[in-house]
Image (cartoon, rainbow, N blue to C red; front, side):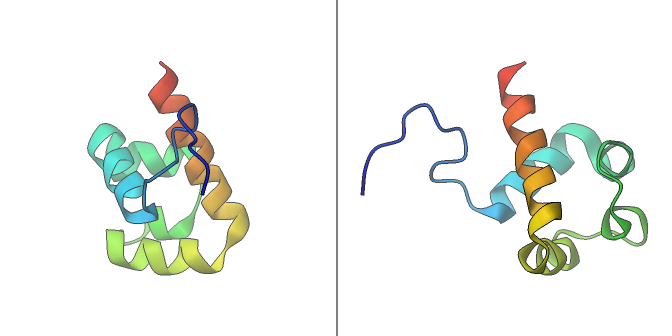
Length: 72
């Protein structure tokens, strides 16, 4: 396994990424930034993780927002 010192996703679980985003933005703001129903309707980390693990395009949007949030 190679080191990835410049990769902000390296060593982060999807759950940790989602939890940090929810702590930073809250569910309402997160649903505005990424329009996904699991963020809008009765959101929870557990239900969102199920959806994100099965939906690559949604996971990509979450990871992209996380990377952007770490840069600024």
